[in-house]
Structures are given as structure tokens and as C-alpha cells.
Image (cartoon, rainbow, N blue to C red; front, side, top):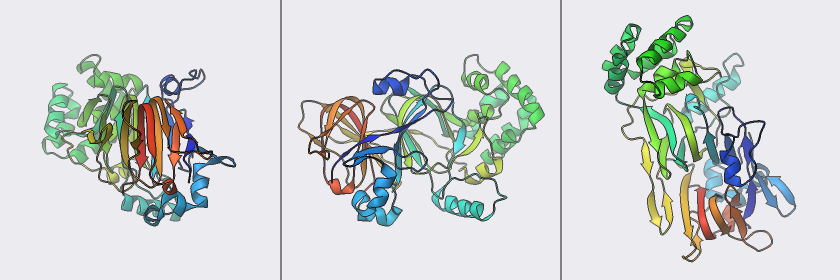
Length: 385
């Protein structure tokens, strides 16, 4: 089979950048709305489009027409007739919601309960888990995983806000669940006064002041203090397994996840928050080091190891001096260029697919081993062998 040019879909969430994705793709920035995410995959919410021999077709449709040829027999057997991952470019200009994602078995059960009982809250869009990782392509700021409860207690106690004593006590007992529940269920009428008191006591221009400026009176501002606050350099990554409470704050990155849109929110958002269901999926474990650093697996090829069967991610650096580099992995692959001018495999007319920054290609399993050449940088999303 051939390698196909792939056209993604831009999603215009309010927290998105008005320039980053447009500049990456070398086009004028939109004037009417921000651009938050570029989706590159076959997720039914917004499938990308391939340039097929008979004209444009959605990647979802292409795979559904020949799942074994497109995905390979092993991938199709394990995940069914669908691409198991979703690749994105994410560009955050302001903070996203505090959120977590369910594990696979819990997602299956919760989705089944929800579909069987229309009276239940509609928390789930599918029966899949959504582990995800993000590799920074610009300096990237995020909250990721719980930090030491004692360190969080020290910071909160230093504010001198007496009403937060129960939260401090829970943290001193290493009871993160109670601390989170107490903050997220704070009486609605008292939330604004509480957040204002903490902002007044916190350093000017710090995390609390920044979050409260975007979400005044939101208790998520205080839950953020329980999490690791990380600043990634380009090439560093964060890994968010099931139950990891996190929030992106600002920056651009390449994000790869299981093909799901299940999100449980806990604050920093005008959207619906279901505290009880969020607490059901959260893992109240300390994450000592949330930053992943890439490891070189071949000349110019790096990867970030994560323990899931749904996806793996590689970065390929092409300096123009080495011979064409074999694209890592087999099975279905999506190749996203982030810099330069590169060439991938062979298209339907027998010539390589040319990629410039912000453009992508799709290689089905039947394409076999393919090579990438030129000068620039590309990310490759695949399914682990």
C-alpha cells in the first residue's frame, strides 16, 4: 500500500492560541477564533482526511473499509477495526481544566452503566481509557500529578487562612482524597472569599494569582497547589496515566493518547464538574518526577517510553547528511513534520510524500517499512510491536 498525505482538523477551544498552529503551518492566523488543537487520527469526533487515489476520504472510513490491511492483523485483533491512538498538536494560551481520565476496565463499566440508565450523568463519550503523553515543542508549563502532601501543606499553611485548617490536617495525614474532596466541595457561596484570601496571601504573579485571574472563585485554584508545577524544555515530556490529575497551563506540544475523549473535570473550567465521579477515577499517589526525557534509539531517532499497548512516539531529526532513515515501528503510523522539508515513503503516484512544518502523512500497515529523508524534524506515532 501507499503512504497518504493526511489533513488534520483544527479545534477552536477558548483556551487555544491565535497564532501557534497557524505559524507552524505557515498560514495567516485566524482573526475570529483561537486554534487549540490539531487532530491527526481516525477518532470519530473529528477524523483526519487522507488524499486517496479516488479523492479525499476520512481516515476513519479508509480504515473501516480494510481494517486488517490498514492496521495489520495483530493491531486489528487487539483493538478492533479502529486506530488505537490519536495524535495532536496542542497550543495553549491560557490554562485548561484540571482533569483526569479513567482506566480501561473502569471506562468500560462506567460507559455501560451510563448507556443502560439514561438518568445517569453523561460523563463518558466512549468505553475506552485515555492515557496520554505530551512532548514540548516550545517551553511548556503544566500541572501534573500529586506532589508531596507535606510540601503542599507547608505552602497552604503559610497563607495563614484559618478556614483551610481541615485541608492542611488532611495533607499532614497524607490523605490526599480528603484534601481534594474538601476543596472541590467547598460551599459555593464561600468560594470566592476563600480564593481571594489565598490570592492576597500568595506571591504576586505566582501560580495562584495567575489561575485566579482566569478562574476567580474556582476551588481548582487551590487544588492546583497539591500538584507538581512543571516547566518543560522542548523535547521533555510528561506522562499522564489513568487517574493522574493534571492541567496544561501554556505552551505548545505534540500530544499522543489512546483514541478516546473521556475527560473528568475537577475545576479551572466553566464546564460541568462531577466531583464524585472524578474522585472515583483519581489515583491518590505521589508522582515524584513527572518529567520524561527522551532516549536515543538510533542516530537522530528518540523515543519516550510509556507502559501502554495503544501507542508509542518517536522524534526523527534529519540533518541532510545521513542516508534516508527508516521510520520506526510497523503497523499503522502517522508522521507529523514540525520543521523543515522532508519526504516519506511513496504516495499513490509512486513519488515520496513531501511534508513541511505542520503537515502529516499516514502509513498503513501494508505499506511495510518506509523511509524518511530531507532536512527537518518529524514525530512518528505508532502502535508498539
